[in-house]
Image (cartoon, rainbow over all chains, first blue to last red; front, side):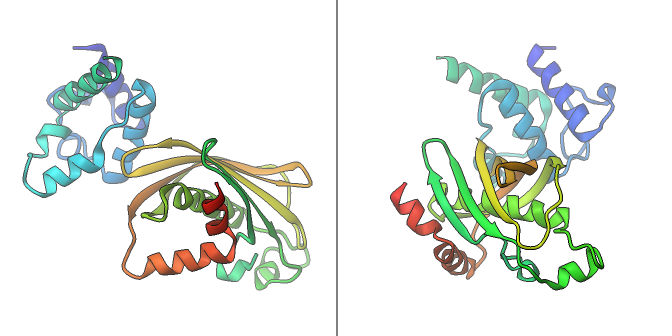
Length: 93
Length: 155
């Protein structure tokens, strides 16, 4: 798996105190890993710092709440990692 | 500073938009019911109230920088250190700097000094939310009382 996933999995493991081996690309951050909104903001801060980006959490939340996107789009880790990679690429472009 | 009313900031001294910093002052009262219990005969400002003081300075910083569009609510306190005792009558200088503005949250580093000596410091995180109904006006009135609105307009 990508180095982005490894970094994100490490952040989640450390921040939310979840054994690293439980975290896979298919894990849903909320449903599978039980991460609550406060812990997710801790994770978002660590991701923002690690990658020098700003995860658009408010936009994502709004899209999920309005039914424009399923939560899996953002909270399944392989999808989250893809979005992080896209944000990093956009920043470097 | 009125401890029992959680009015922890007396005056905003400066708000620097470019540096994303705020400095405020506050004088610990000579007497307060808080001191009757903390501790009998040995009055000290509790660490939780010093933390609240740093949080309020940080909150006013976020309010000022965001133009009172959203309300910051304290959600995490990290790396808090209490380095010196604070007794009645102490004049405090409170400084806070915005470390990171995330989506829906903000992170500050804050510290308190007395006569240039470090009292405490912490990293604070806030959830940034739309104002609950009616709170906007109250916060503006409070900000006006402590001089934040004037500083925000000048900055």
